[in-house]
Image (cartoon, rainbow, N blue to C red; front, side, top):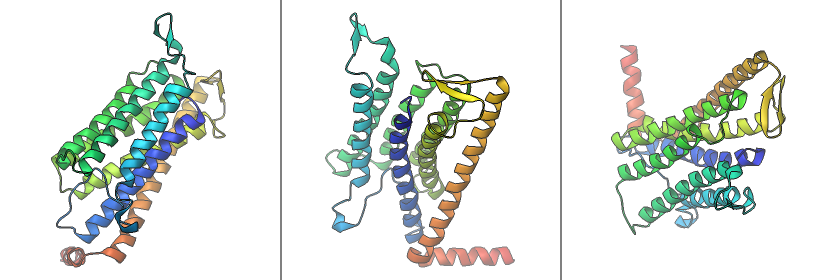
Length: 277
C-alpha cells in the first residue's frame, strides 16, 4: 500500500461505497421519515432489480482485487525466506489480511441479502464494525513504523476508521436513527477521500515544501518543515470534511424536493411554527 496506486485503489472503493450510503440514507429518510431504519448496505433499484446487490459485489470484488495485489503482486510470490514469512513483505501480508476480512464481510452480507443465512440488521452492523476494527488494528499496530509526516497522515486515517467503527456500532444500538446512518456514510466517504489525499500528498505532486520521498520513506529537511506539513494535513482534512458536508446538505435538499414524503413537509412546517413562537 506504500505507493500512489496502493492508496488510490482502496480509496476509490471506500469513496464509492460511502457516497452511495449517504445518498441512499438521505433518500430513504425523505421518503419515509417515520419508518426509517438503519441499513448496512443499500440495494440498487434500477434495471428492474438486476443490480440489487451491486454494492455488495463492489465491496467483495474490490477487496478481492486489493488483496490479490498486496498478496501476489507486491510480494512477487516470495512468501517465505528460510522457512519463515518473508520479513521484507510483512507490510503486504498485513494489508492482504485486512482486505481478506473485508472480503469475508462482503460475502457474509451477500449471503444474508440472498437469505441463505439471514441475520438481523443489528448483527450485520456488528459484522461491518468487525471489518473496520481489523483495518483499525492494522494501521495502529503496523509492522512498518510510520514516523514523521507519513505517521501523521496515518494517524488521521486511524481517527477516520475509528469513526466508521463507532457509527456502525451505534447503528446496531440505534436502528431507527437517521443521523447515525448518515454519519456512517460520511465517515466511509471521508476515509476514501483521505486515502486519495494521502496518495496525492505523500506519493504525488502535492508533497509539502521541504519534504521528499526517498527510498519509499518520507523525510523532511527540518522539524519546522514537518510541522508545516502536519498543519497542511489538518487544513486538507478540514476542506475535505467541509466539502462532504456541503454535498450532504445539497443531496438532502435535492432528495427532499424530489422524493419528499408529506410527513416530512408537515414536520418541517411544525418546526417553523415552533421557531416563530
